[in-house]
Structure formats: structure tokens, C-alpha cells
Length: 80
Image (cartoon, rainbow, N blue to C red; front, side, top):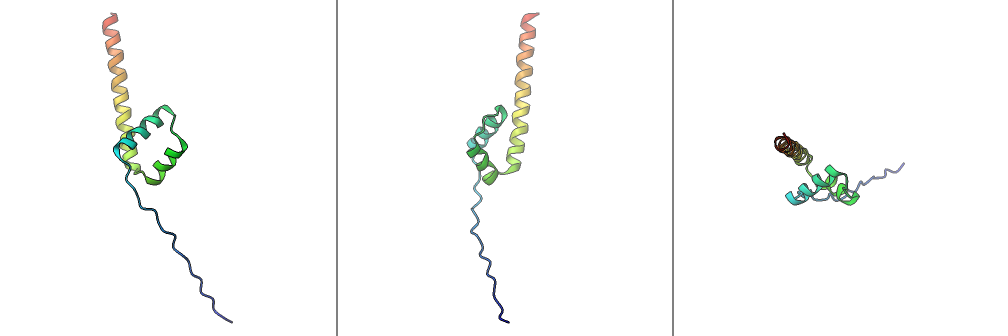
């Protein structure tokens, strides 16, 4: 019997790029209104930091709620 060596080649790993703040904000806004392109979604999942997207999502949600509450408060105070 002859022994065969099995060589497993390591595939080169892609360097983990950091998503810049502009791309992060753009992705969060696009996801919030439901118009994120598949290319950008794949980029976010491959290169993005999940924690940055989670924090960004919470910040966006808080700002959205404050904005809506301010608009409603303004409308109600001028209407009454």
C-alpha cells in the first residue's frame, strides 16, 4: 500500500476592510426605507462590522422617533 498525502490548499483570505462612516450611514438609511441594493447588502455582510450596524440602527431609530415626536408636538401645539 502506498500512502498518499492529501494537501489542503489554504484559500487566501480577503482582508477585512472597514466600512467607512459614509457607507455605513448610506446602508442604514437604504435599509430603513427598503431600497438596499443586493450588491451593497453583500458588501455590508462581507466587509461590515455587525456592531457598527447595530449601533447605527439604534441611533437612527432614536433620531427617527424624536423627529416624529417633535413634528407631532409642533402640529398639535399650533393647531390647538
